[in-house]
Length: 157
Image (cartoon, rainbow, N blue to C red):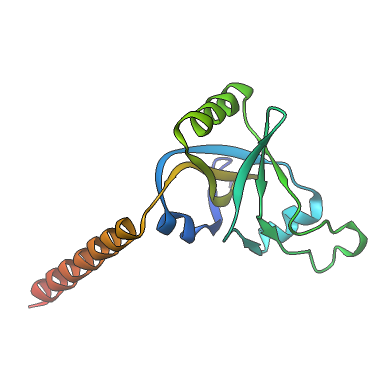
């Protein structure tokens, strides 16, 4: 039996980002990690709650992504909150950097997943929501929920 090399296994999702931002565009980036960090990601111990991306010298880094230390990693464990370098093409990084600088977007990590054996991170070009936008999207979600519930009740009979 041959394993699928493009199989995607979701490890963590940044739900707070979907609540606080409008996601305009998404990009896929590789993540530069050490061995014990990869094992910890495989175990699912990733927290992305207050994470964001920053640019430095033509490179992009994910800040605030917490990867818990691997239990059996002892001296090889790294700082859980260290900046993780994202691996993208220089052209893509420059395009995103230009949009962030001109139009006031933020770059936020949305999810961490395995694609084959590689750890990937989905980052989003995001625009912040105001309080009334959050209320509006919450009301829309509630309305969809009640409609779905009513349809299920109707289809049962």
